Image 1 (cartoon, helix red, strand yellow):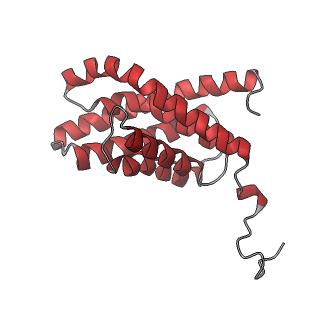
Image 2 (cartoon, rainbow, N blue to C red):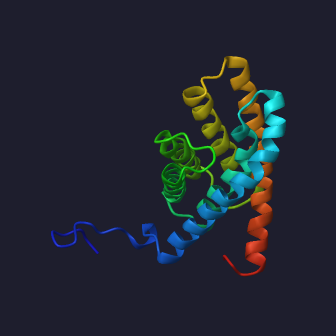
Image 3 (cartoon, rainbow, N blue to C red):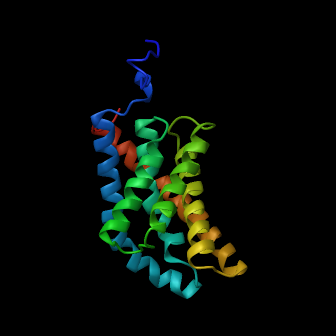
Length: 188
């Protein structure tokens, strides 16, 4: 089908998001937001003693839902939509860890980075899931540590190292969750 005057907003079928895709993004986003208040208090016990932001340690477990949405749906823009919707929800509802309007940036930017990496890495292997989770978590940590918290260099480096390790764990757990979702035919 060619682009004509009547059909100037034609999007190729592969790039369109179906209702299933959008519901899956919303469900995974909601799960990520729902577990945040459960995980963060436990993580803050460790992070406060290390003097690093709690999000650098808990982020891997929160970013795994974005990564799952991206690899399951496998359409460009999925992680960006996921991050934007989470950031908007956090900002509007005033959830734990909200940075006001900047929440939209701090939640969306990791999705942008995941989309860039998705151009070069395909599939849903443990390596890809871990890589996506690591870069998403490191991006979120850097943005918050640099812009919001304005941490000194040593604390920022420690935060990034913590976010790397947390991202690896998030990638591992996302692989486990994806395996269970496939086993029970929730996803293909």
